[in-house]
Image (tube, rainbow, N blue to C red; front, side, top):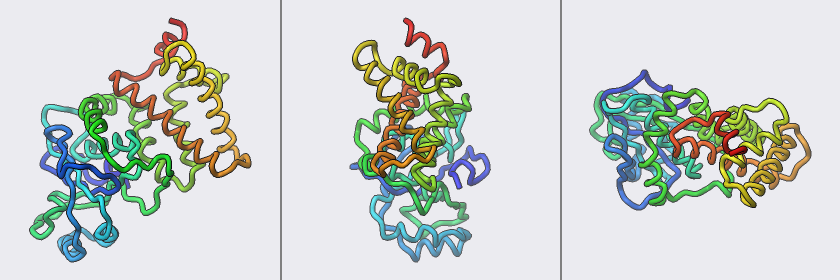
Length: 292
């Protein structure tokens, strides 16, 4: 179940989304005035059970996090000055942007209308599971746990761009959903398939796909010269590897894992390009990059 679909559209109050899978130095980080990340102390099984007695019937599913480190909560409050995502969606967007920054172990577990740091005095409980998946794909090369200051600065600078683009553009929303959801696929091959579905949706070519897609992306992301040539060759090679994986060719596990890592990075580059430039990529952008 995704965080965005757990409750009705919510625009009032404050919600606390329990998460796990990242580390950060400060006890609390303010992303924006209405969006914060705070460390959560050790959870108590007895206090979780108390939530169950007050209406959170799924409390036992999050019991394993009582024994884990790196728990935190995303604090998302109402904000009348912005539009687009509601309170819970904004928390989902923050989680997804952290995945975009290669914090792929992050997992939104459950939401609550009061802090997970103070479960003793919870009344009028409103709680549900979020993007909680017992099984997640974990790739060594995509296992950065620590949220660095550069990550926080980037998210602070560009969060509202991402919020606006997601509100206005279906293709961008789809790309964000894939950035987040590939981790929950049943296997690596399925993950590679949906990552490339998002990449191809952005580039939108239907003939000579390997050549035109590689040329378009390389031209958009790199200046003319050796760097662009290398990027073109790398993407073309990656597309060939993607085809072999999806069509069931006999490949080493290391080659399949590499294809996943590089495919995720490529989609991330395109999504970050759109966020940092605050616009969707159009066919004219590729044409200008290639010919001008």
